[in-house]
Image (cartoon, rainbow, N blue to C red; front, top):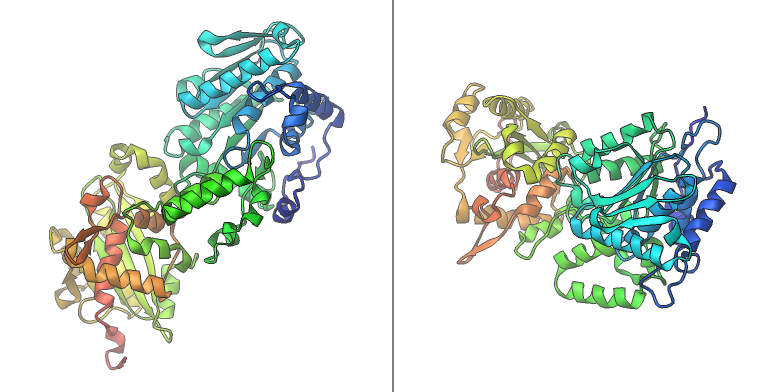
Amino acid sequence: MTVWQFAVPDWWERLQAGRSLLPDLPLDHAQAAVAVDIFNRIRLPDVEGQPPLAEAAGEWFRDVVRVIFGSRDPETGLRRVPGVFLEVPKKNSKTTNSAALMLTALLMNVRPNAQFGLFGPTQEIADLAFSAAAKMIEATPDYSSVFDVKDYNKTIVMKAGKGKGSWLKITTFDMQTATGGKYAGWLLDELHLLGKVHYASRVLGQLRGAASAIPEQFGVIISTQSDEPPAGAFKEELTYARAVRDGRVPRPSVLPMLYEFPRQVQADEAKPWRDPATWPAVLPNLGRSVSLDVLLRDYETAREKGEAEERRWASQHLNLEIGLALHADAWAGAEHWAPNAEPGLTLDALLARCEVATIGIDGGGLDDLFGLAVVGRETGTRRWLHWGRAWAHPIVLQRRKAEAARLRDFAQDGDLMLVERMGDDLAGVVEVVRAVRDAGLLPEKHAVGLDPAGIGAVLDALAEIGIEGEQVAGVSQGWRLNGAIKTTERRLAEGEMRHAGQPLMAWSVGNAKAEPKGNAVSITKQAAGSAKIDPLIALFCAVELMARNPVARSGADQVFV
């Protein structure tokens, strides 16, 4: 059987031109037309005149209807497009369209007593979806004779037609409910709100697993971008959808429809997305449920409140991906972090490009991260380059469940190492220090910096590879780090400090809270609370030593001005 391909390499040109994101697929156009006709006849219950979706819905969402119901093979029953991932900004009728899509699924279904599910990440969103579906039935002629709406358990049952006895359950997404049946079709709204739910990926896998018994099964995920750095199941699904869109998945299982700006536009320091002329490309329902005048008013209000609020607004209304979780008391260097990224800057690359390097270490207890930072001074340019890593015991995943999904993401990236035994983290730190030493880049004095408190085990581990005495320097924490904090801020603002663009570090930087202490600025773990900043503190320790203008041991006879 020929594998259908869902890649759309010209997706940005299509968005700018207002064209469909659907690839050219051999759909069953007759079945697709039947589904679209059913969808079009559903009426909006909360709009003046209760217009049918033929008038009120956008063609972009009818594409979703076409591809789902026009991709079922009439001979085998297999649905050739088993899943759709739709990323669209707020106020583009996601919940309304979701309810109408699932009613369409009930009416298109031919399997007796089939189960369908519409899942919201919260009770409020699930209730909104059920209310929308129930009122659509009430507002649409003849539908009350087809559907039986059961308010007490948020269920809609088919009481006539080929799919008699089939039902749609509208509820919150949790392990027990979502895995309680074999769904012929399901839809999950606002996946980004489940980014920190540790079981979300597992439940999605179980939902999809029903396709082995129900070949016509479909699954739809609809979500806005997250107002925090993507994590967990949302990050996984979004990353996969982008890979399919870009043609990097040979046997795709999800068709992506992503209304977002290209990565280079989002990362551009000039922020071209601020121009309202660019907004229609990512707002498919503009002129219907989305008003440009209202968006402009809200955007100006958000921008007046500061960059953090502007970015939050843009994440929700323009699908911009947040690289840093900036907040009101964010560290000043945070806004300059993302523009200085050099993705792909490895430790080996740093060592090859630099004439000297210092190392910062910051460790904690069982439920903390053990952070390490390498800062090198680039030969010729004298820019500073940074690469980091962290270690953690798996117990941190239990004690910090809210961050467990994100920490697992960092582990998959290779930036966070999960160790089974205490001591393995020290072994990892020593391995990195040895690599920098063997490259001949460590200075004779003040090569490795760390908090003087509680460093016995670290000193012993470093001594075993000959790093001791004046090569190890105590770097006091709290307000005493003010010089390193300010130096890092200035280097980043001037573009004189580049880093590896590691999500672990972006998260750590975003967690940092600045506290004024007289004329100094303090960034402490106490201020950050449960959010982890150990890799950032390690960076400050390395910066403190690099600011002393060191010379590598192997090049001690060189003089730098």
